[in-house]
Amino acid sequence: MNICDFMTNQIIKLDKLTINKIAAGEVIERPASVVKELVENSIDAQSSKITINIQEGGKKLAEVIDDGRGMVPDDAKLSINRYTTSKINNADDLFSINSLGFRGEALASIVSVAQVEIITRTEESELGTHLIIEGGEVISDKQTSAPKGTRISVKNLFYNVPVRRKFLKTISTEINHITEYVTRLALAYPSISFTLTHNGKNILTAPKGDLISQITAIFGEKIAKACLPINKKENEYAVTGFITKPEFSRKSKDYMYIFVNRRAITNKIISDAILRGYGTSIPQTRFPIIFLYFDLPADEVDVNVHPTKKEIRFSDESKVYALIESASKETLEKSGLKIFETVIETRHKPTTLASVESKRSGFLKRETSTSLSSMDKPGFIITRSKEQRIDKFLPSKDTAVETKIESVSAKKSIRVLGIIKDTYIIAETQEGLFLCDQHAAHEKINYEKYVRQIKKNKVSVQQLLAPVSIGLKPSEFEMIESIKENLKSFGFDIEIFGKNEILIRSIPSIMGVSIEFDTAKDIIDIFKDNVSEIKEKMELEDLEVIRDIISLFACRRSIKAGDKITLERAELILKELLGLEEPFTCPHGRPTIIILNEEYIEELFKRDYR
Image 1 (cartoon, rainbow, N blue to C red):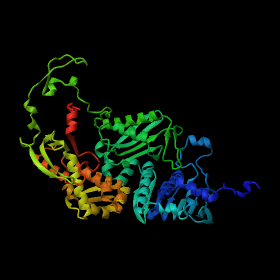
Image 2: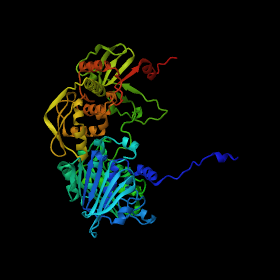
Image 3: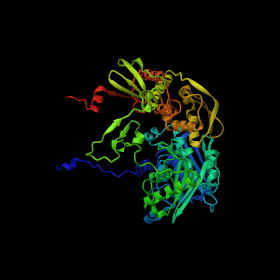
């Protein structure tokens, strides 16, 4: 008997529903994916008004209603099958796509993992089509009276894929994703009216108008008034929209809105070109507020890279980069801002004897003005200068302070000698020379104080005499509203103040008695980047939000490099720092202390006699 007779077939053909469920995983990641696909279809259907209704972050309901062309009955039934589309006819069309949708997968993916209701009617039809689909199967098909356009209601997303449903984020997280995406579409298509509601509450209203009116409606007058028009064209490449001056920059990239042929995208080539256009006018850790529209021939950009259409490729990347960089730079320069070239080389290089000039040295004077070669043996004479006496480094005394500082490991005797450049505390220890960065040290001390207060649930709070008012974009507003109670345990009291506006009424007292508007904006960005941390109970030492808050205020509240402090204050900083359990790094891992031990110093001076 052949051994194959005992073996069973292992390769099977998957059924249609299973295939569609697998495909759905590539296109439909979360409720926001449903909204994206449905709204893009509404835009392609030439709608002038689009309403999005959401319940429980889209888990219970994601409904899109438009006044577009609608579908005839046969098209409506065909549209829920994979690879059916009205956007392209053949493979050649993939090289010149002018619509948002084209793959013919979205609706088929949605109906395979949700309970879907479709009501649609064309202008020419007297009655509309009403379909009810569950798990990809049509369970009801009838005619109904309906307005022109299409209404698609997606209920109980992933009801038949419980593993996927379990991994959906919180309701607030999901509605934030939806809100942000609708914001992008409203900016891309200002000629369309958009309305977004969540659990019956209006979240976003962007009435039909021009781009600046949409920016005003969504982001407020302050940002709208700060907008600088950008407009440059080279052949068939065009850059339009608005950018803002560097002072409106944010910690987060979330205010960089980039559109290619009206498609909202994230693209490193374009964002890098914009930042290059800003030169050194904004720090590397900050990002400008921009609303940039780049238009080019459809056959010079590939949007068929990924099922979600998040990625695109350009046929001539260098041309795209050069145009956007120059357009950004010229717009800022026209506004009166001087743009500096981005620094490529390092700012500081080692000083060689050959490069020391007598007029700059202060204590070294060359005996000869001839240039040095590797064979020359230059002679120098040491001259004393009153400007270079050691007491130049002592803030208020000529005598060093000696103190005993208790650390966790042992009692150390430290003799404070002075402060170099009003930045580094210098002291003598039994191990050798002790250098302490006064800013990093004070930042670490404040961080530990703050963590201790949070652990005890007794954060010392400072009421602001003048509460700070901040206008937020809709997604930020929803996010802050969802965590404002959690923020009280961190020392922040926030009040909802009108539509998309909040008041910061109190802050942790460790951070001062007042905050500036720019600081308040950065606080919002920190909260936004750490929503899940703020909501979940985690080990406080692991919370990036605490490190970011302390780091933000350290630049304004802690002792900074260049601040003059007395020896007594320096001594107090060292006492507090070395009293911590881990005193050697700041909250972000930068050294606070460096000890040049005796062996190292001897090696520097070639005193190794082994």
